[in-house]
Length: 94
Image (cartoon, one colour):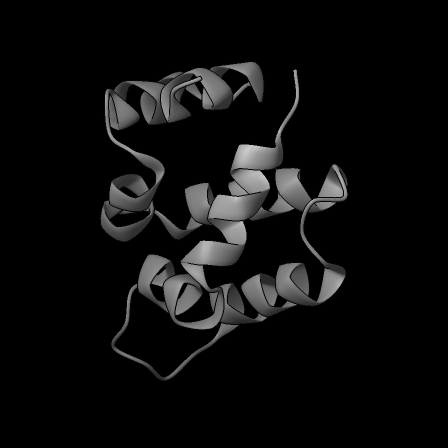
């Protein structure tokens, strides 16, 4: 199942689904312009037991971080290893 299809099944917003288009998970994770979208994905995976509370909490902290020139999305990418999220995405069962 393509990444976009998995995001549809998770009920991602229409804007995110359109933006993902035919991007792979890795491309979408690296290029996503919105920290809120990355945070939403980590939250969904955490609620399904596929990511730890610790990783979720690190995402929360990254969003709230002040005094940096990094975008919220870049702050999240700096604290959450993409391979951890990728493994969780591919474990999703529908």
